[in-house]
Image (cartoon, rainbow, N blue to C red; front, side, top):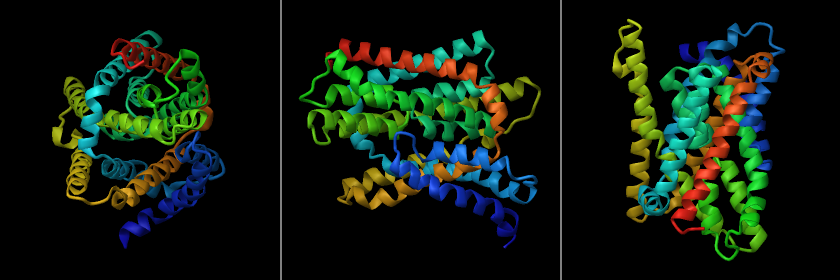
Length: 342
């Protein structure tokens, strides 16, 4: 009862914002529900003079619900399928992730971009957009404005990729009788799952390939998602070292991202169940709930974000996101060419 009294109003506000944004995301997948939710939250918060009655619930949604979304994301991962695909795509995935993180680190130093924003943009660009940012933000203790800024940057280049990559694939001479080459390109060079889906589906439609490209792209994308595990663990260690270096006493157990353990457990449950003959469709509601939780959390993050400040400080992160995006795309193409896929 106390939980509802303290957090009920804020959670209800987030729910009221996120439900229509969820349906808008279904209608316009190239934009996606999370982006609609952040924008709606940022606009609505301008009209709320006193947020004190809502703040506890908003904070709970932006922090805890975000972690629950990552845990539920694990139910979308069949590790046996991911590992099978990884044999072919792993060198490309590792190369693109390394490229994005290096570019983000270099640009953070050169352009004096806040370290947490740079980390979120680098991780979001290299792994899986909003999901990776959702997993990383609690580990590095990023505030909601930093999360909102990173999501906004990732969204912008996701949208461009979904629109232009099919045309780029045609210009580069990707096979139009097989979805393999473009599927791997979309799965490694496009950040967020919704935009991967949009780009791959467009390629399938353009050349009458059914869902061949989409199946390949999504599986490669899910393989990238596994990189959340080592990245968050390494960041937790770095965060602990930094705090100790500043003379703060830090309990690693408090910094350690335990929700990642549950994410792995969810993946193992899915893999074992599917191997035992349980249909994949059984886990679909949990995967859908994961996506909705991300939309819900983004509405809370939007409510905690100063849109004016976001616009004023958005230039440098946008340039960083562009460089990460170009770097990933080029490395993906080069690696495919070297491996004889394209």
